[in-house]
Length: 209
Image (cartoon, rainbow, N blue to C red; front, side, top):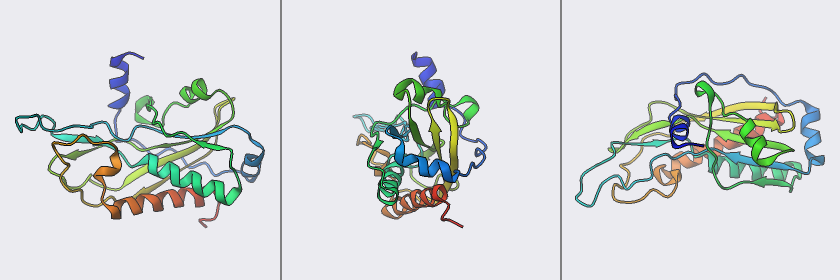
C-alpha cells in the first residue's frame, strides 16, 4: 500500500451515515461455540502521536486526530463474550488495523479476509475526530460501529453501534509522545467507553430489550 493511499484512508470523511443495524440471528449466536477461528480486531484510533511542540517550544500541530478508544472497547467486549458464551477460542488482536473505508463508510472487510483467511471476525471502528491542542470537546458523542463478519463470503452476521459522550478533554501534553488514545481521555470518559462495549454485548445477545 503506497503512502498516498495510506493517507487517503486515514483522512476519510468523518461525517458519515451510521450503517443500518443488523440483528444477530439466534443460530448465528449458537454457532459461535463450534467455530474454531474467531478474531476480534479494531482500527487505528489515534492519528497524531506527537510531540506536538518542537524543542524550541513552538506548536507544530494544532489538533490531534483521534477516535473512540476502540482497543479498550474491543478488549472489554471480548472478555464479556468469552465469559458469557464460553468462547475461549476468540483471539483478540492487539495491533490496530488501517480502516480502508469507501466514501467514509464502514471499513472494507475484504482486507480482513486477506489477513485472516477463514472463520469469523468481530471488528470495531470509530470515525475520526479532531481535538484542539488547547483541549475542549469533540463536538458531540463518539460512535463505535461493530460487526460480526463471516470471512469466507464476507457476509455480515451482525452489525450495531453504540455512542457515548466523552465530555471535555484537558490540554494534551504537548512535549510528550502520545502512546495510545486512552491517554487523552479522562477516567470518566473511559468508563463511558466501557459502558459502550457493554451495550454492544447486550445488543449482540439481544438482552438490551
